[in-house]
Length: 212
View (cartoon, rainbow, N blue to C red):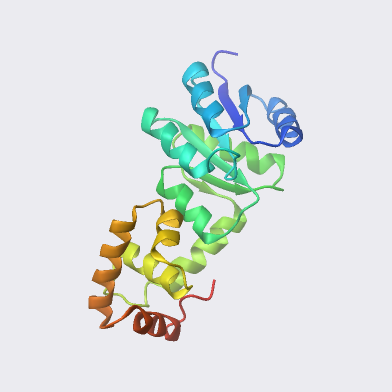
């Protein structure tokens, strides 16, 4: 039907794609117009069929779904991307939303939640599944009182520093370059009054960061 919401599925597990396609095809006004198993296939397919929504896994064989989402949205800023993955960690949720995904669900959700998310994303809304929303709410509640002098990004970097990650690993997590991470760390050290990285880690852990 001409007014149906069109969807492309991106997941490297063919059996999962088959099942998901069957679920979506059973929904009124939503149709699957293509499937891809890799980021490269996804980019080519989206350019070809111009869907309204892409349902994207995080883990793909040639690149992460986060990187694929960033590429797709660079070419199609109006595209709705719904991440559907087995990963429910904070870093994955934050990275997906940071590059422009409009929705995030954890695999195992029911057909009703998938339908609501696809419709919401297609209409420009932001939607988080129950698991991701709970984690985000906990972060928002706990983050504001710790190091209020830091920006949200600096606090995010400090959290990863407190977890023991090096600059390269932090850059990968946040989809930023290492120079940017170094600048953030230099700024936050000054703001929290830490002379060294080790001192910053100690201060952060005392404040409850670095536990996740």
